[in-house]
Amino acid sequence: MSQGHGHGHDEHAPIRHDGHSSPLARRARALEALLTEKGVLTPADIRSAIDALVSRTPADGAKLVARAWVDPAFKARLLADPKAAAAELGIDLTSYARLGVVENTDKVHHVVVCTLCSCYPRMLLGPPPAWYKSLNYRARTVADPRGVMREFGLELPPKVEVRVLDSTADMRYLVLPRRPPGTEHVSEAELRSLVTRDSMIGVSNPQPERAHV
Ligand code: FE
Image (cartoon, rainbow, N blue to C red; front, side, top):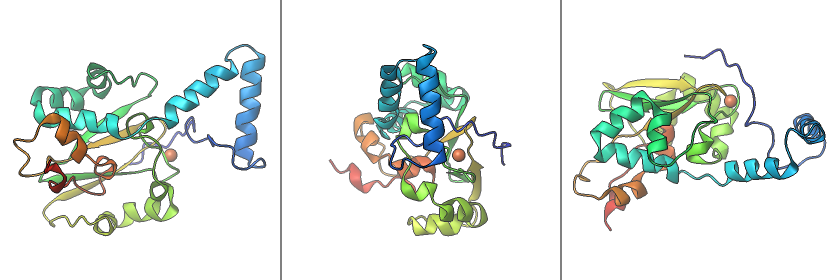
């Protein structure tokens, strides 16, 4: 399940410099200084790339999921070639090494973790939540995924196979959660509002209640 964890740590260097002494922060600043000195990047390029990353929200992920729920052909394309499918909706994922989209069904349930650090599809979900980065989540999701999901309020029937995906800097995952029952007549726009960040990580399922608009 591990992908060899060849971490490039491209997205792991501290974005906000909250400490001046951290070795990672010093390394990032040294790299930044060198790149600007050599004329490879301008400080404005760096700033705008950081802004683009931190301004992402789970709305883009939700857009993909809702479209997949209402359009089976799009779902097939999303599972087969996530980047191309995302581009159809105007979401640019070209800077990603690889992105996998995995579908949760009544038979198999995927949950995503980065056991080494906090690899996460930021371009689709925004910055990861604190719990995703915690040692507790990283260790326990592998050892006891059902127990972790239970803490998020998800009790899976024993017959459902649980697959834990270990993401890396080179391979990130988006979970395509199950469409909540009773939402057959809910519009795509309303469906989007049902798709939670946590359901796209796989620790919970979207709930139908919020569909009552
Ligand atoms: Fe990581």
